Each structure stands twice: as C-alpha cells, then as structure tokens.
Image (tube, rainbow, N blue to C red; front, side, top):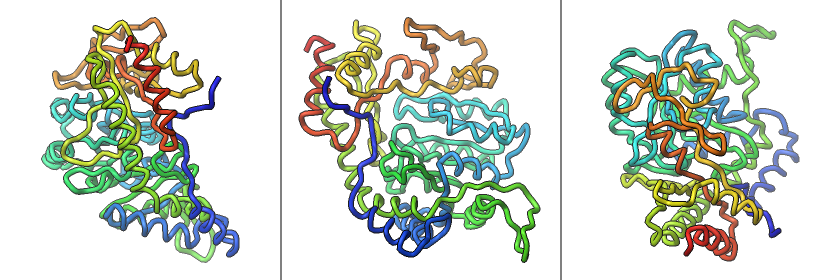
Length: 391
C-alpha cells in the first residue's frame, strides 16, 4: 500500500515556530497574551470584519453567538440543513428549536425560497444561521434581504470559508455575527481553535466576557451569570499568526486542485464538480464531485477504490434533517414544509430523500484536497477515478 494521501491536513511553515517561541520565551503559554491580541487584530485586518474574539473552537464561537443574541429555550432558529452538526449543535445547548432550511443547487447552500417558506410558519425566528458549504459562499444578498425584512439577526458560519469572497466582501463579514474555525483540516489551522467576529463591538466584548468565565469587575471572583472556558491560548494563537501569513497561498493551491479535477473529469458526462458562486472567489476548501444516477459507478465505489490505495475521501455532509437526533425537527424546501419525506435506505446504510440536500448527499463525495498533494499524487487519484468510469 502506498503512502497515505489525506483529504486535508495541516500544512505548516516556519513562521509558526517564531511566534510560538516568543510565547515560550516570555512565558505567555496560558490563555491571553500578545499573540491572541495580535491574531485578532490581524484577522480583522484580513477580513474587514470589525472586531474579533479568539476562542477555543468554531463551535465555541457559535455557542457564544447564541448567548450574544439572547437565544434561549423554545426560541426558533433557522439553520442551513446541508452542513456539519457543529453548525447547529449550539442551538440545542440553549434548548432552542432548530428549523432546517434546504439547499439550492447553484451553490449547495441555504435556498432563499425555502427560507421564505419557513417564515410563513415561523414569522419571528430569533436568528438565521447560514453556513458556507465547502468554502462556497451562499446567496447572501437574497438571504440578507429576507432576514432584514423580518428583522432577524444572521449568524454566518464561515468555518469552511475563510478567504472566500462574495461581491468583494469576505465570507464571515456579512452577518450580525460571523465565525471561523481553525481546526486541523481547515484552510489554515491553529491545531484547534476558532474566532467570533462582528461589526458590533458589543457582541465581541460580550463573547470575551463569557469566554473567560463571566467574571464580574470586582476585586474578588464574582459571577452574575454563567460563563465558559472558551478562550484561545497564546501558544495556539501563535500558530494562527504564522498560518495567516500563508492564507492566500493556501487558497491559490486549493483553487488549483479544484481546477485540476474539473479539467480531468470534463469528458465524463456523469460527473459534476461542486458548484462555485460566480459572484465571488471561493477558497475551494474541499473539492467535491457528484455522480449521476445514469452511471453504474457510485460514490461508495470511488471511495472504496481510493481507500484501497490508502487515499482518504469523505461522503458529503449528511443533511441535518436526516440525522436521527433531529428526526422530529421541522424542515423546509422551496416547496414548503416537508413532513412526509420518508428516508430511503441504501445498500451501504446511508439514508436520503428527494430534498436538494438529500440528493447531493446521495450522489456526492469529497475528493482529496490537501495542498501538499504532489503532481504524482494527483495523477494517481485522478487515474483511479477515471478507471472506475472506464476511461
């Protein structure tokens, strides 16, 4: 078996060590410190997001966004359906009610028409969470216009979309609150970490207060509300500072990988690459493909073929409305509320339905998108996939 080819894993550079060394040399190895402050400032400068609070994870950032917006028990929150569970899990931490919104095919993100249908039943949701899937930005103009009409705050889950743009603006800077993730597989990493950003400084100040155990201004330890241990450490922030210097380089390499796959499969009519938003520049965090029903080849066959050569792939995110834990939650498509979409079980145990997100999940897979892939790696991956289609 050949060397391991990863879906996406950290790519480190020398600058990270310099910032980490500074943290050790000055004994700033705990939460807070010069690297944390500088990383927040540098992220604000890159994204033009206004204000930032560095945190232990993107999930922590989403949770604090809930707290900043006052989301609590039984409040309704609309969420992207085709996403990773971390997008919506923080809603359940606060015992609010999740309502899932289907995708549209142009970007695979939240469908504005489905969002309108959800408002017909729930005219006053407490927030809308929009995730940018695989680094492709959602149709933010349409979504923001709908939310503005109803006076609903928008939380932008840009965990996968740092450096992606839409009409010249950075992903994460459109909503009332945005979040980023620096998990090990993201376009830049701090090993684990996240950030909450907002043009409203009151939100980031509140997040900072809550992330440091909600300690009151007093000469002793006094707490008037429940807080969390969510702050990013100075060492971790040093890694992020070094990584941020290479963000545009990483983006260019990700885009090149996507274009190589796109060109390599252009002559296979059953294959389509994941769509990019023509109104922006996507970071192509993960390159994905879908396979038409007319093909004898399935995503599972591709994944098994690559796995046999020690090459990592991944299914498309399974939509949240198909997850057992959310089986009772409301779900809206462009046709309206869906109550009787009986899941279909496949040979490999996966379930789907005829929603747009369900269809993408059924037909798609994520391809190896690591920026350290050599030309030989890409030739091997592409050759194995083409061979599955008899090419």
